[in-house]
Image (cartoon, rainbow, N blue to C red; front, top):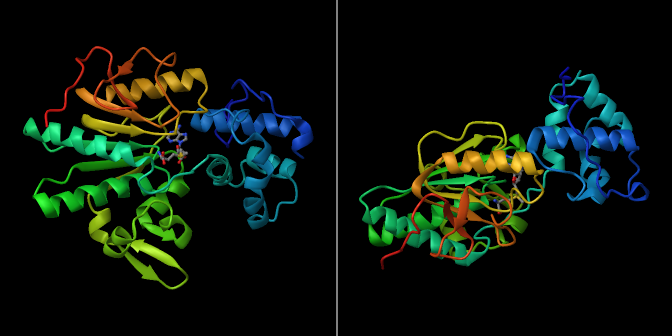
Length: 299
Ligand SMILES: C[S@@+](CC[C@H](N)C(=O)[O-])C[C@H]1O[C@@H](n2cnc3c(N)ncnc32)[C@H](O)[C@@H]1O
């Protein structure tokens, strides 16, 4: 039986090392939230901000006038509010991101795109797990600068995330003062964003135009169509359970050209996680499909 929340009671429940003393949630409610999160995203709650479950759900409880976490879980399960399970997931996933996160990665990306252009093609880049859009917007800014200064083509950028709320914000291009202060050089801020009252900054339409945003679950949904030269999937799969992680790697590999490169986050690796990818020698944190030859960047 699949309940209105999309959670199947048969889904294995992992509560892991969660300390009950740290959470006012009952064990049963925590088990329901864990199963819901894993079914909807592939992530396990045990290692995933387990002590903060109550804190991150508080704003949603206030909005819906729900007093306790157990009542919130009951409301998810009774299915009368079809949006509620999605809102709980949006609150539970870790959307931490920033502009030009790990800046050296962007140098590697420029090199990789130049290599694709030497083959006479316009590069296609997929930002998988793009959160609120800072990663694809950083790519768009970097390549728009290069287009203006060097006349090089703008790569096609596809950006996806499982969270409806994150994708909606990414599409809006709206950021707070705090968010633009994280990693965005002032020159880029002034050039590509418009200030609005209330310390809000909105990306100019021409910056958003080359990016196509889409809600997509990496562990279930088909990849965006076409083959990608570069796939960024940074800091997304850290807390995935083994089976969803393997499914996600398969989806990423299936969406890449044989010569394509996968870029994971600074603390991530494919070693011991999947046989589908191998470390590429062209840059730190870059992986190629196992069957493909090791790429070389010609200057
Ligand atoms: C920590 S953020 C990383 C954002 C960005 N890639 C970066 O490194 O700055 C992780 C993102 O992965 C998304 N995510 C988690 N599970 C996912 C899944 N199964 N499919 C697609 N996106 C997922 C979350 O919604 C969140 O926005």
